[in-house]
Image (tube, rainbow, N blue to C red):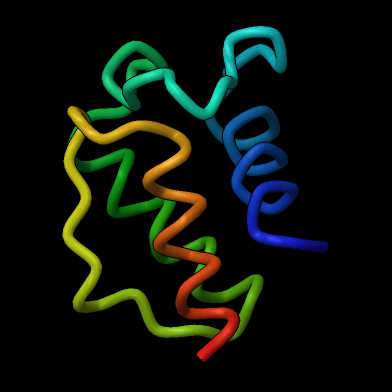
Length: 77
């Protein structure tokens, strides 16, 4: 699975987001992702992809695309 697939899969299965709502330009806050949900998502992504996202600072103002790009950057490293 690539970063986009992992993020999309987790958003749908763990956070109840509909696939139609997930677009790269969509702010995470529009998907009802608050700071607690973002932290949980970060941990789930780290576990699934075996990467470290500690220094990645994302807020609910960031977009799905920014999250995927941050994860991609760590997977490629």
